[in-house]
Length: 270
Image (cartoon, rainbow, N blue to C red):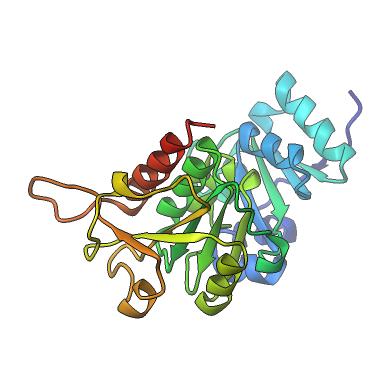
């Protein structure tokens, strides 16, 4: 397999500096790129036609058959191939034991206008989700449960951060995703006839008492503050997830999974 690799050994090389900058939001914003580590995630990105700008391969992984096949696939789609010592791969991934392949991938525009409010699916709205691990896990759950998509509302964390991408386990590349403010979001969901259901301490019914068979959107609030009263007032239904014991709340990703899977169960896991 004749592939053309650029061999880089110095941490001061401009390409390595650029790749290392993608750990920070400033670097991602300036370049429009983000990092994904591991063959599984990169295969997902290529399968969904995300643009891999650069594929980095460690010396220790360069001769593996699956790495060579992935490199060819990325190269055929226009990616630059770079081979580096393991220590440089580790400095890019910020890990002592990085995986054999790391990709710099072009971000996609997350405009709400590009997402149609399909009334046949279950949607998730996240209001000011601040934890990238939660966001990535919710994307993974949405993918597993066949959610129609995830809408990030107001000041949410960056879905292209290393933590969010890693936690999504490749679902970032499969799930419809958009980012917007609440006013535009609320108008969008009304245009699709979506019943907006929020999990809230102010709910007056259990989550299993909600009719999710109708066109529905599940709205989840900030990890610390939940949803403000003005946002709850716009919801069609407020519900509670039953809890007993000492903890006063569930993790956001857990609560979202409980809501989404109840909705999917009501739809016969179709």
